[in-house]
Length: 580
Image 1: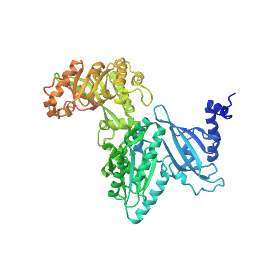
Image 2 (image 1 turned 45 degrees about the horizontal axis):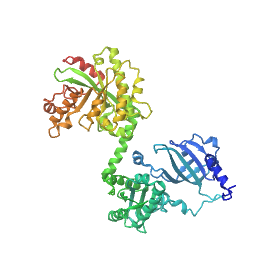
Image 3 (image 1 turned 120 degrees about the vertical axis):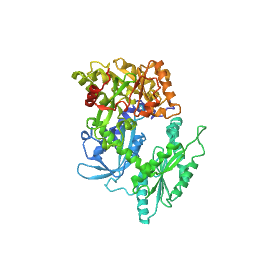
Image 4 (image 1 turned 60 degrees about the vertical axis):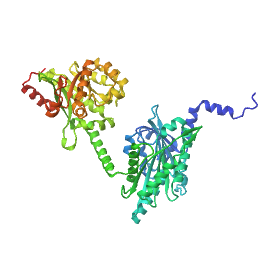
């Protein structure tokens, strides 16, 4: 018999051996409403307390959006569009909401949300905890100081900041005065947190908050929004000069190293400053403006500050407008895009040796630039593969029609530019490019050439190698696009199954010795068994400058602009040079 063993030890050990049962009991018996949703906000699990708060049966909750059961009393903090674009949405937040009961009554509730991450640290599920803000008798709780305090740092949280900011804006409006808002983001804190561990990282956040607090005047508010982001509200003397002095003091407070387990860790902060009423006239817009300025500061390097740039704000609004239009267009491509084809020529004989598919707008007046000018934005939106697939399907359909009509266009090889994302296996529908192509019903692909962006080879070499070899097995020819525009590993280029490469002559000839650089590129490609095509020859001046270049193939508006399929057929029949 172990006389020294505590009598409760057996029960503790038994619970430790069955943690799932303990978790289930805590979930079911908690007096707080607890709900787990998937990444889209659909309810997966809900406990009895939540059903009591919401006045519904548990069977009525599963599969419903969590937002169906409450009305928000404040904007959801930290989830602005540009935060999502930068994948910096907070992993946890809290806000006051009204839960809508079936009997029509609404009751105040504090909702706290925590992200449950997958193996790649992306939110896979969300844990929602609902705490009643009323007494058992149904009276609203008056003393709720704890609701307004961030438990990790002791600073005001989003709720208290919102109240003070609204009050400060109202006072500033009445007094015709200004106020300043400083948005603070700790540079590379995630990397530091990964090094020291999350427990030590939380301790360091507390120390960091204390340092920042010492830099702020007693009449100002320092609040924590979550994660490593803080906000300072300057209610009195909120001028640009005062805001800059406070920002510089905040930076100075971070200069002494933080000590963790004998290690000296340096921290800096990127600070964005927005002024009322010059930069924004309401709470939400002021915070958004300060956040935008913070991103401007961070792009300059760590430990920098920036004020709101009105031109930048205008550009961000235009960027969001363009992104919305692009998203609409790519999800409804038949309504917004047209396929054009530009011929490629043999320089010696003038023969048409192939075609390249090019996107055009159906409603060009809505756009300032052609679709090719927006490819980077489309890639950032994660829509490149969708648009690329629509383009490939259109080319296959046109080629099939040319064959059925007996058109000589059906005898020409056709090139389709490939977006960089298509080199990866992790597409939006988990269907790699070679699988997609196999299901297009084409008898043969010996007429198709896929043009791979040179930049894609630089960033996805290993993935690209496997994918390109699988595409080659389908009989598809491969070309590399924009040689010379970005660095390419020649060793890898020699190993990849390319038969052709395009060189955009226009930008290269603007450099010193540009013609020699183009010629060197052509000879290098020839040595690797890759045929060079000089692209973008749109005017006689450029044509004259590349006259001595040895490349046999050329393409550009000077020889023939891109045409829709029906016009291309007529052009080809009228073209005096033999084709093939």
